[in-house]
Length: 202
Image 1: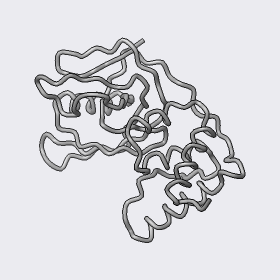
Image 2: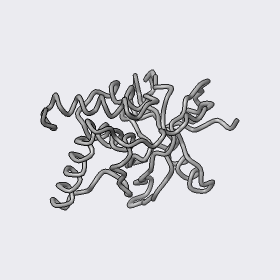
Image 3: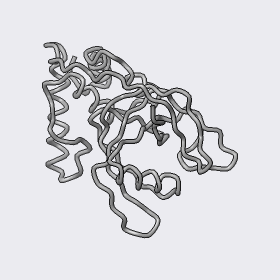
Image 4: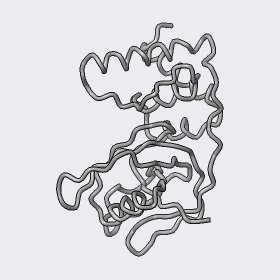
């Protein structure tokens, strides 16, 4: 199995999620070049300890479950800096991580089965309706919508993932939600949070 290159971040990437990156470190500039040339993804993993930018004495620890990222577009507005947009595709479990001489982390990756598309149950439909309202408000304000189309309001996993990306929840909680295998359970937990924060009426 070819080792998967990893990009540890202080964020969690979900399947079908949109990720924007400003890339300037040599190890990641080389990675983006390789991914573009070879049309292959890289792995995004959430940091548990350490910083995104390499520091000499920094100790890095990251989650073992992450999400593959495929490049959508790459733009260079000035030498040595890339602005990258990526799409999250499939979750994976990483093992045997190693750091190369240039600082890039790699690991053996086992893909995790995608969420089975499921309709939100009757009591969870409100989460879909509220998300549609949020997106419409963003569009009316002519601001950027942080979600990629097509919008799948009939898919419990997709709805839950999009809420997880924008709700003010701790990184560790966001990671645990991403790891859940049952999309309906993920949406139920999101629904409870929306009720607690009065985003949805009880």
